Length: 260
Image (cartoon, rainbow, N blue to C red):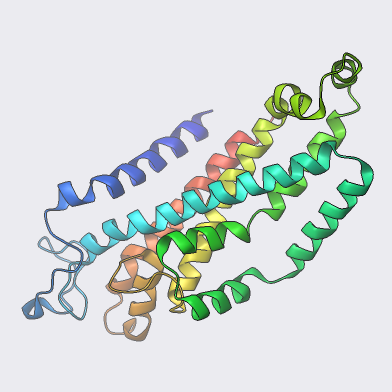
């Protein structure tokens, strides 16, 4: 419980910092000051400045808006899609179950990052499109765990009693099964946030994700990669934020999955 509270508080702080960045910082992420190029961290610029004199702390906070949005919303897409497919497979006849699980297995075989890199190179996606793409390739784990949970539940007495009284399969799923499966879905959703953020960061790092001048943690690392030996502070902010956020959501998922 203590771990869960700490993870929720830290995640709340990260989200609040991202949302309040325009009000709290007072400068824009693309404000250029050529007289302040490549300055090391100082009281004036907490994380230093980049090649164009842009304040890296400001860009990191604005980048949180994009990276957290992609992580959270893509996880929502993948959780809803995976929950729907896993839910249908869990209560449907055996033939439908087998077909949906073969579809899930086939989707798991395809490497996600190369597929997204091809799609990103082809379409140069905007943030909303990137959310959909990342969410659309991350549903399989959720579908499998929901299906397994439901298959174990459909033989229980309370489900059989509901069916015996004429309750439809859809109503049984909604009223009797989903409340029991919800903790498993919540754990899968928190893990999906971490996966989505890492995928967004990797895509932006390779230049096929969020496109400049929009700041995201991934494309900030991409812009820093050629100057790490001379100006290492370019990567400190986004790298640390990715690490802390993914660690936080994974800790939250672990706390939700804890058993007495």
